[in-house]
Amino acid sequence: RVGSRAVLSFIFSFLRKAWRTGEDGDLCSDLLRDSLEALQVLPEASLYDEVSVSSVWLEVVDKGSHFLQQITSSDKEGFVVPLADRSSALALLLELTLQRA
Image (cartoon, rainbow, N blue to C red; front, side):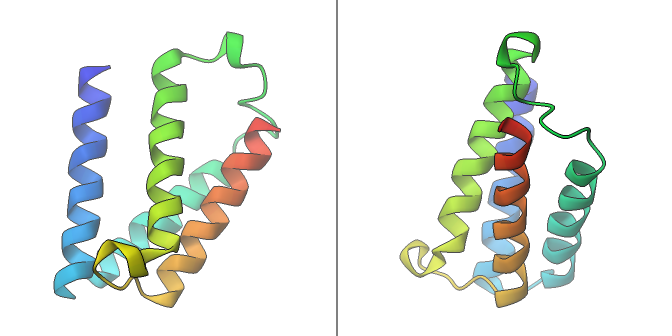
């Protein structure tokens, strides 16, 4: 649990810094696209039965969803997320919703 929180915090901080400074934009885009591709290969509704899913994994999904929601409305965050990255974030949110439905 501690490790997953640390990794998420690092990734989210890296993405925010990269968008704020305008550096490493290609890495941000790649990370979002790769995450989307990884979710798309999972069986449909793989997060539906929350009893059989690890609580750590569910926490990661919740924190990731919250972050994605924040960056899709990045005007409030003090930096601008490129449109392509916002689109990828929205696609990720949709995929996470489908996996839970």
